[in-house]
Image (cartoon, rainbow, N blue to C red; front, top):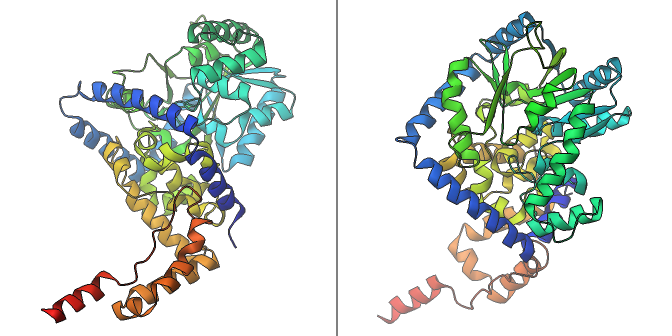
Length: 461
């Protein structure tokens, strides 16, 4: 029996793969990205050396993970920050509801964070009567549209400027011919009033810095700074894998993240938060909480292969390089993290039984390996996930029978040649309607195989 999530994935992939408008939009946006990244990479004298250094630091982190996390907690506490360890999404949600109720919050302004998407932060806030509004323009667009982020870095990548203009016309009454500048100005004006009214500001974390107990957030719009400057409470929701040992290492990671993410030399705003406002400071929150989220990460860490995926810095480069992602899009995965890195992580985070199919959503072309700034062997890890899936008996019965049947027939040339081409064509006919869809047709088997013709030709000679 095919799991429900696998069926949803297959249906969504079919629906979007041959959507010409979607393909054109994604092709245009990723082409722009590729052009910017090539220019950004040219600024490096030796990009491979930078990747090696970053990979070595992340390897050290994973070898001493608990030590760095405890050092981080100790330094956070000395800075006046409260650290909360969340074993899973439910516990993180409980912490959030408790903080909202404690501070009687009615409005939250939130900067871009995939970790908050992982625990459905906005939904939880709404359940206790608190509005949570996205302040990153891309996140704001998908929130207004009632959608999930499409991409780790660029959440509205699937929308053209015309799509966004129509959306803002429907929701806010802006002219349907509105320009990107007009739309951005409207969003800026709307969000400015929200910053001033908000009770709580929420961010994720690009890096957790152990030696200073600091949280580093990188952004291009200034919205994370605004989200933390005015509200009296700052909540950070961060995956435990975001830890790095030293603040000095940001000199390597900042430009590496920027160039792989958007092609920039540096992200526009790079902020380090080291606790709530001090008595000598004029702005910033009075209270700061950091929720360190496990939610399956220790399960990944305990795996002797998959643990390497925790080195990811969420640059999104593997998504932009992946031919499968570029064909089926981010929403088809039905998971917080899509593309190659999502296909590796999601089965661990959400269960192999329901999400093992994602590890098969790859051509294993190796493009993701080439662009990864911390050298995660993504194709190797996808193959490992596939092996686990087979060992756990998670493949559908029809697939098991088909693979065994194909193995029996194709393993012996005589058996393959013995079966008439008409029978082969009948057996493979369902592929035209089930697996491949109407856009492709399984090629017909010829009456005589190449080997048969060769044998006959040799006999004549």
